Image (cartoon, rainbow, N blue to C red; front, side):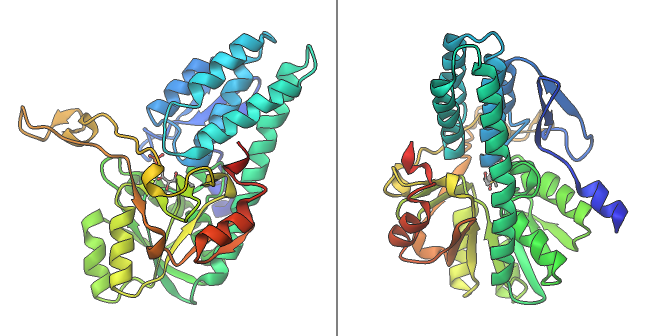
Length: 349
Ligand code: MRU
């Protein structure tokens, strides 16, 4: 048990000796390689290329990136870093939210204490995320039926936050309490965050699981082999419409068809009350080569176009509940989310 616990401790993003340390998620699970970055532009590039990914984790990485920009106590450099880092990926609101917190911290820093003030704020954002993960895990685990088989999509684990995870936090907490018997892990095309990253994390926990292709979920649900679906979120609109990894919407439709509860787990920093509904959430479209190539080889005939939408929107009506660190929001979400996120959500931006 101790060995397993020790092994399960990792930090997706860390601050060590004045540098940002990241697990290079593009190289997992084959290799556990840590990148040590000392320039904010390298952090921006790591977010763009998804060496660090997941809504809260890119927010934390960007926050530490802003700290790197403050080494010379130059406010113009900090502002340049904030401007670029906030927009590297458009869908996850945690990125712009974390950068905005850093901008405000810079605004209140006394002359000569910019670096110190920003480092303290980045540490605060990280600590708050860890606390949110633990609270979400507990609240979510309470909702799970005993001995359940859970299906999850993409990776909403510690790799996507900092150390524990949101949707995967619910599953880990539920597993530790003996409530989760089995996990179906969607591979999550095109970048395989489920097959590579969620399976890596759950293996450290000792959870029994099987990786499936995304298009197998309906088959399993129709045979009664899924009791509950839990996913993360990249941005939740004021009405509860939720953007998450491409394929999440499909799962929610299937879950509704089969009467299976569909839970979203996310920190309040993912709730964006400035956006009224899902149609207003910007959806990232990435390089088509992520779809048309595999292992550096083209798998689509030459001249044929591929499209690569990174996220989709699940309408609020398909979501059973949204689990946040402040409590579990139930429909109607325009009311319940405002109650929970009014003070803490990104509405304050
Ligand atoms: O493109 P990614 O891998 O950054 O997408 C990640 C997701 O969709 C996660 O489910 C979401 O960010 C929640 S992370 C706790």
